[in-house]
Image (cartoon, rainbow, N blue to C red; front, top):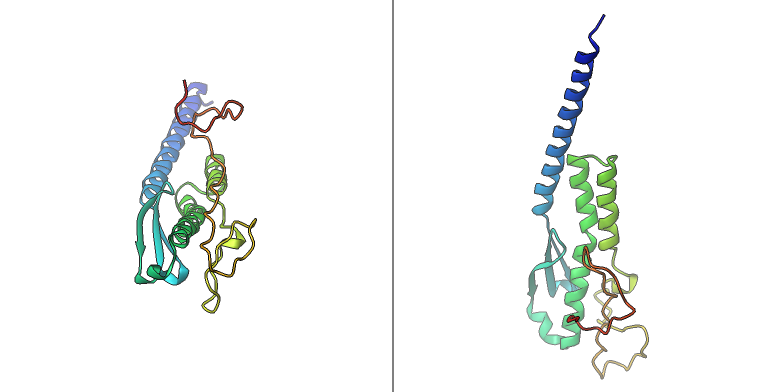
Length: 179
């Protein structure tokens, strides 16, 4: 008859070995995610932006073609390139998750859900115009003025609270300084 204590020890050893292997796979995930860098271009390549693993821009480059754009158009193109690069992050993360920890793990599913929530696909209105179509930007509430006036600045998306920050819109006066 087998010793119940040795069976329990084997079970604990197996659990510990599995936990260690899982920790190693998640460390591999973290190491590979840390290396993510995504570059996207808009306006026929006139504006390119690279974002890092956290979605923040690490590089912005422009060609001579931006000289034909108004400052508002340049700014809108930079933001469009950022969003376009960020929108590719969940796809890249899914590849890394599949290669390291697997897609079935509840933690990896949570990570992917947060990535899709944080970096959604660009809105349809942000798709690049064709070569024959001129660049035009609108916030959707204005009429086309025929191109004689610069486009209005794009509205910022709603603020998301930082991790650990309590969302309290009731007393929000827009100031970053609170007493």
